[in-house]
Image (cartoon, rainbow, N blue to C red; front, side):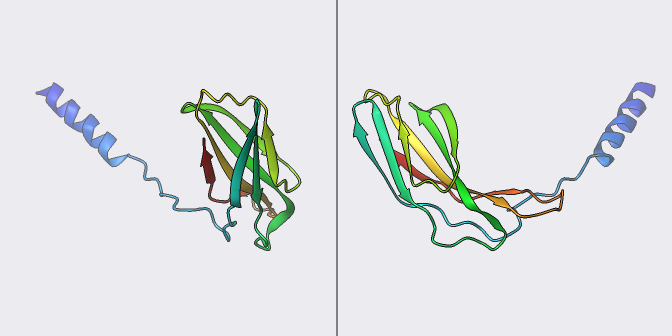
Length: 131
């Protein structure tokens, strides 16, 4: 009987002491528009990606922006590259036509904030090309 009472007490403590987490739906601040006209060309063992950057950015974004590219090869992560100074192209020099590549391109902007509780980086939605 003591064992059952002890288990009920322990169970009650765990149930009523559970932490409550708030779900974060999105980051605060105006969103950054994604890249447009993402395309690629292949030349030998190089895949050259080109895109257009958004024409305007939210007021709190520090310019020039960066571009982040996530690369997957045959469904496996092959790396992430961050390009500075508002680039509009990238050359991937390990292309193998026998494998499937996916490139996800996002605009990455630093946010001008002094608040330690606000992220100082904001990303656009990703634009994807796969070949």
